[in-house]
Image (tube, rainbow, N blue to C red; front, side):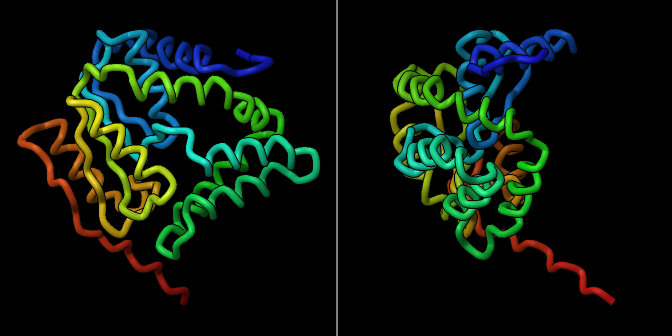
Length: 218
């Protein structure tokens, strides 16, 4: 359905309707980046539906970088195309050379949004900041894995504090990897997640898995 504005009740409700429509009673859930907030809200509303939780590149605190981007986006939207803001944010979060594939995909995905939809998502920021504060202190009842890139300079420290506070959470760090761990080091990421979902255990740290070299043009 078409919504004038978005909030996390609407987003979570859409997810629940799809799951119920498919007849899924219980499953393990994996979230990416800001999706960690949606996953925790889903766990709050339908705890019986969730087995284990995996949060890749999870966002657990409203860091200075996030607040700066949101408030800058609100102001600069009057002067600049929203894709310029996406491009800027991709460089803030993914600044290194080995992050270039993630940056490219991030920008490609932004092209699927209209400016109207973009403003709706930016408008979530008040609800987003409020939920971050609440979920940081809320007792985590599900076994949870937080997978972060060692080079994720924006979100890593908050993730470590989150895991330290919750007994049922554990953390895995992928070395020489940025924020989008499931793309940049997808094989290592898959190994960690499968090990977590199907014991025994998982390594606390993992060596980087080099990306394949691009094919040379003839």
